[in-house]
View 1 (cartoon, rainbow, N blue to C red):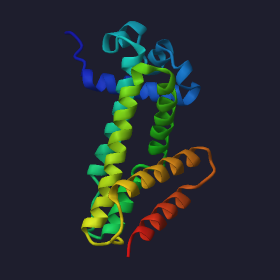
View 2 (cartoon, rainbow, N blue to C red):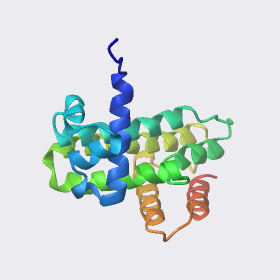
View 3 (cartoon, helix red, strand yellow):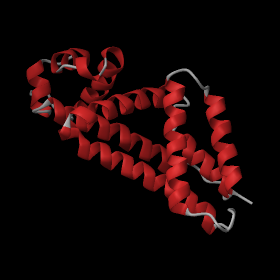
View 4 (cartoon, one colour):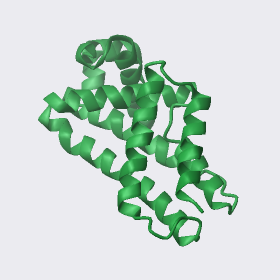
Length: 194
């Protein structure tokens, strides 16, 4: 009887192997051979799912982005605007091992996209989605009446995006702790409010 393969799970397995290899040796040394070995597959089997390395990297980054969106969608909101916004924003920060791994891959992907024009569009899409989500958090604070009247959702969204991105980067460098990131985000949100 032929072996039945779940292609979606197989592609996710390959993507996770890609993350692992990228974290171990960096994006530039993440060869199809290294990734296939990490996934326990032959190079030919990996090529069945991903014809090019760029296609594999794009899928891997998209999977990481989807995981973040799924976590945010699953957040239980309390109805308290400041608390809810902080809880959502914490999902964008490397506060545990899983999110740290995703963030490491995100920064490697972003770095690689500077020199690989085939990755630029996806990088921009991921960043656009992140900026949009953060701006919606600020809009939520404004609509709830929690913020100062002169607040611009667009400007504050950009500023908060830069803060989140910077905190995540510095956490990966070991300059700031998870608790310090959470405190910084909460303090920033509280300064936007009345």
